[in-house]
Image 1: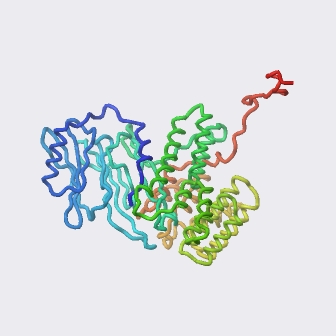
Image 2: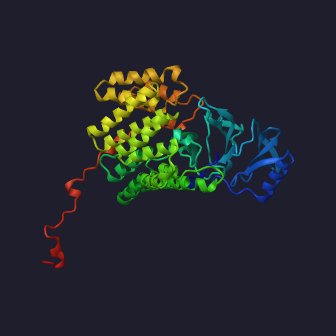
Image 3: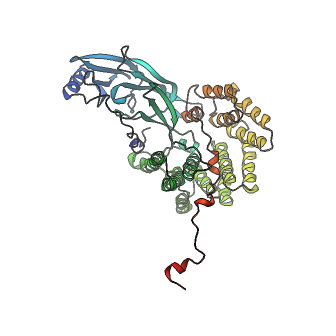
Length: 493
């Protein structure tokens, strides 16, 4: 499915390459076009906008029966020569390739249709990056094997950072409505090491326990991970206002969050033929009061199970648990297939509220829904995470680890999305510096089919932002002393 992706990509062009290439001539592009037109019916074509004057490159997808063919060619000494040819099992609406680093590298993502055990349809394939300018061209310099549903920039990139997108593995993404919530990560090229690497797309800052701006920036990342995009944007605005350093990082983080908010808002307009939900749009944006306005407007028409889930979660995030319980009761009567996932979302919301306001109230709420989750699906990844946390809270760190290990490393659970229990176990390993265990978890997270690439990236590019949950205490020397009688400055008695 195509998804609005332009806004997020607009922030990519902040690290432009200089001195690598000049614009290819119109004559060279014409040569490539003529060459491709002679190879068969062209379904899609793309030319690197700033490829080398000596070796301008282009690519085309040709329709061939039920499938197709991808060919990459370049102009060298006035002649066109083929660099790479690959067969395509299917012609997809998304382009299967793009050029990186102004044509120095080629990214391909050739996919085929695949259906998972839940009946959800995916595009499954290998992402590969080829070096087009070395002596032994083309050669693979980076690859991600067996990854599902990736999106990437389809134009020639002028940046060493390229944004990858993948639908988030959330049950509300499977309800058949727009908008679709996506996960993002950077595919970054290091000009010194000549290597690609994956990173979280929002960048954390050090010293979050002492520096206001860093605290607000990292807290925004935590809120973003909870789905609270509007709150994350607000926190980043505050961080920008008080920042004395690292402002470019904060501004880029906010541009990414704001662009995602905008993209979520325009998906329904871009694809009017597909069913869309206004409540889901507000929910993904983290605008829960707007979700509740939609709820009130639709009350007399009744709610579909997916709508009841949206409203129940929105009320819970507004800490209106008694009202949320009414929608949960409706779902329990309907018994939709996503009920266990819904329970786990309630548990996570209660965990978040308990961290912000440590009381027994939200801990009891979390435990209540965790017990419900156990009754519905005791093998649910969320239940294992919750059970591990209960053991950790009672000081049973060894048993907490053991519960996660027995689940994550059990082949019986290989078909489950293990991203959350893996991350939980990774944090425990990291806290006691058990590096072999961390390495094993990272390797396991990349076993295909990879439906949750972000789960892998969060391990590969692990960062602990827990210090952002503590407010920065301002020292007395940084406080502004207010006068005892402030109105006297204005001659007011």
